Image (tube, rainbow over all chains, first blue to last red; front, top):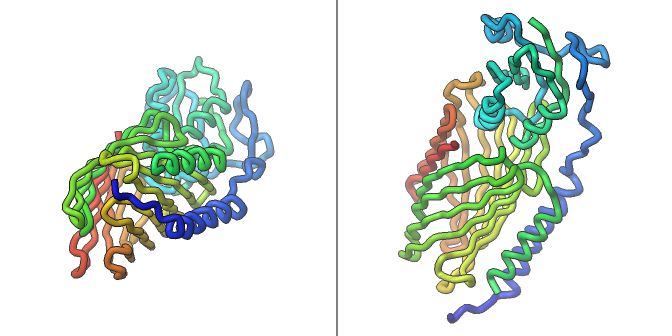
Length: 146
Length: 199
């Protein structure tokens, strides 16, 4: 087909690609141990196990919980949620859960607020997995009973 | 040979990293136009690690029409509380034959306020091979809440080996909900227009 494979040109560009890949692997590689990985399964509380309080935009929170009496609110800290476009998948994923009554995203604080039915047992590992498949990392969760 | 190279690169990229790229089951449709091409691109993410898609192209430079079967893979992602950084491998095989294909990388780093991105792409064509590259920086003039209209003011510089000229120009990007529109203008290369919808 008249095609000539130019090894030299391809080789030069491949070098650039591999240098970038290698550089990114060394410098940018995610370290899974750097994320706080608390398991909150099986208990509910208004304060984290390690005693730290999650930062919440209370005006936004109070607006969110209006008319949600009798619900559980999971306030989840999410890393990598830097834009509206990035967070769309999180909302879509949790909207499919029949136990979820309402969801909100607070970009300024990096928080996802999810209102669950009171009868539902909130599993942080399950939430982490659902956020991970959207490409972000859930690091902490606080559950508040209304 | 072309297919073999793309396959090797694809396999290699899988071995290097295995991080999420998007939510499973998500689809995106994009329309793009610049001085080189008009294209319509649909892709689907079977998992958060990669996407596959079809890009239909009207090639302005070579006055040709063809499609690419495309594969994009997230080589690396770093999430922090205030930023996200991504590095992608991209490839495509042409409907013209396995010996016409492209491969490349693009990456970005962004906070809610700042954006930096780059891309490099090598295209193999029977008529002439060429390389394209771009670099982009941006700032958000205000920080919108979830659901608001978001705006980015950017500066983009790009070059391809066909004319060996750099072109630098401003770009405006707007997005709201699942929709995004981006356009830039340069008196040498005229308009860059990029429309995107995620569903």
